[in-house]
Length: 121
Image 1 (cartoon, rainbow, N blue to C red):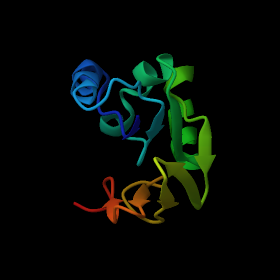
Image 2 (image 1 turned 90 degrees about the vertical axis):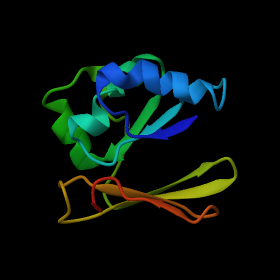
Image 3 (image 1 turned 60 degrees about the horizontal axis):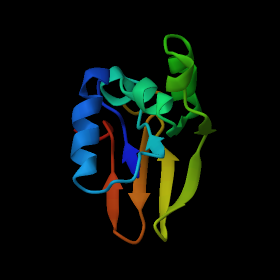
Image 4 (image 1 turned 60 degrees about the vertical axis):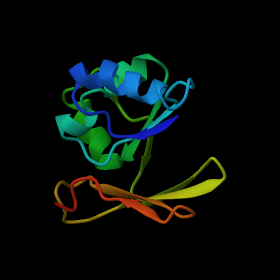
């Protein structure tokens, strides 16, 4: 399973319960759209369970200041990153001068879905 953002830490059990309704597979990859706690608060919980966390390099820098080791992104990018999920390319790209200095959007190329994080509200 691949999820975008982890919400606040106390919400992790509810999130995992909802995910189990879709699949019995564990969350393996988390992509953070920026460093604020309502997007990264559950990173430690999911990192402790074995998920790999991906984020812009500035998100890693911000989280290093205040987070447990398991909450820190282990894959970072500075401009863009492409990953393959379920035979679909997911383009992750940095948005400069946005909500934070580490904002990212994710574009699911086959599904034609754009996840904007907090760059659009």
